[in-house]
Image (cartoon, rainbow, N blue to C red):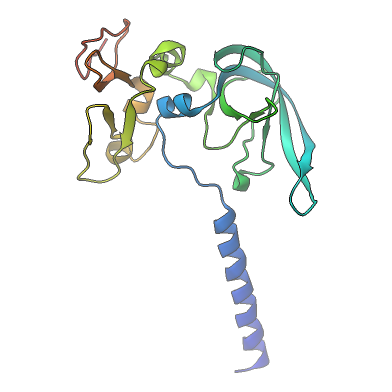
Length: 220
C-alpha cells in the first residue's frame, strides 16, 4: 500500500468518526400529537418574538461557560403556565442540541411550549411546539383553550406499522404516521383525545363542546 493510499484511508476514517459523532450529538424527538406536547409542557403561550441574544447561563462540571440563546418575547395569551407573564425563553444555540430558531422582527405570532426550570425561566426545545399561530387549525386552537386539557389523563398511542392496537380503554390510537407518513396529519390537525364519562378515551372532532357520552368520532 502506497503512502498516498494510507493517507486517504486515514482521512476517510477521521471523516467517518466525525460523522458518527455528529449523528450521536444530533437532536432526536419522537413523534407526538399536539395534545401530548400540551399536556407534558409546563408553559403554553401565544407570543411574538422581539429579540435574541447569546447569554451565559452558568458553568458545566469542567468549569466551562454554558451559553444559550435568549429570546425576548411579547406574550399575547397564556394557555398553561405560571401566574406571572413570560417575557423571555431560553434555548440551545444549535438544532443539533435541540435549539429552536424563530424570527425576531415581532411581526409573526407563535404558539410556543416549554418547560420551567428551577429558577422559573422557560426552556424551549425542538421537541416542543413552536408553530406560527396562523398555521394552526381551528381545532388545534380550540384544543389549547380547553379540549387538550380534558384529555391529559388519556394516553395517545402512536401507530407506525401494522399490527397496532390499544391496550386499555383510556388510550386513543394515533394513525397519522401510518396513514400519511407525517406526524402533522388529520388526527393531529383536527382531533383531540378526550376522557368520557365512563373513564374511557376517544377521539373527538366537533364544533360544539363535547358531551360526556359522545361517540368515538363526531364531525361538525
